[in-house]
Image 1 (spheres, rainbow, N blue to C red):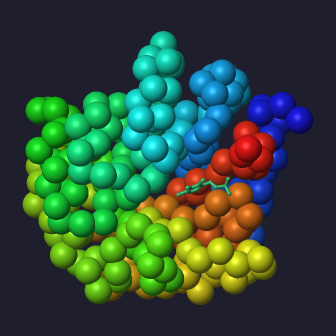
Image 2: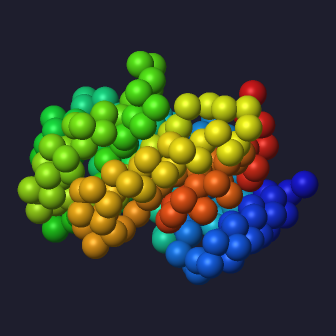
Image 3: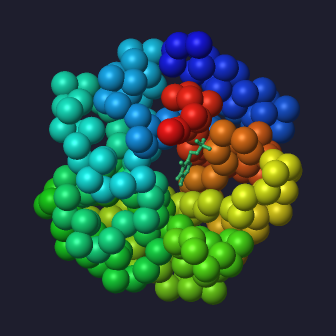
Length: 225
Ligand SMILES: *Cc1c(COP(=O)(O)O)cnc(C)c1O
């Protein structure tokens, strides 16, 4: 199947889940995760109307952004763990960073963002408490959210999570619900409009729990090697 055909299927899955839950399908943005895939496939998706793309590694993000500067309204989302020493490179090309998980990272991004620009920021939460994963704990979230809000150059947009892997996609639902509850505890959708959650195998469950951004790789670009 072509990337264009796969995109149609994914958009149908999003629309079906949203409609089923009484939500507007337009309220769920698809971020196409292109990590490990060549720029040509990003271009193919772009030509099929896709505009938001996610990358996990700073260097790969920068390289692909440079290879695709001729696509004007393409938006890059940094969705992988970000080291502070890569912040400078990333803010030059990223529209949004979904993985801010410390006050120090928020401060570094703010310091590196060019004058008169605003970087969209989501705070990553490790809802499953997994040692090997990025994200701050739910207890630390308030401090990080407050820190993002203090900076003129950062626009606080919401929360992001990658739940523990479960064979049954429904197993992710409690973690998605936990992120939605945390958002409510921190000020609700007025302060934190975006919930970035849901991937290829569990996007329906994320949308039912209130996701406004789903990050989908495999279903669009195929298995990663
Ligand atoms: C790779 C990745 C995705 C996409 O995963 P798929 O299962 O391929 O859809 C989404 N979010 C993050 C943070 C990822 O690392």
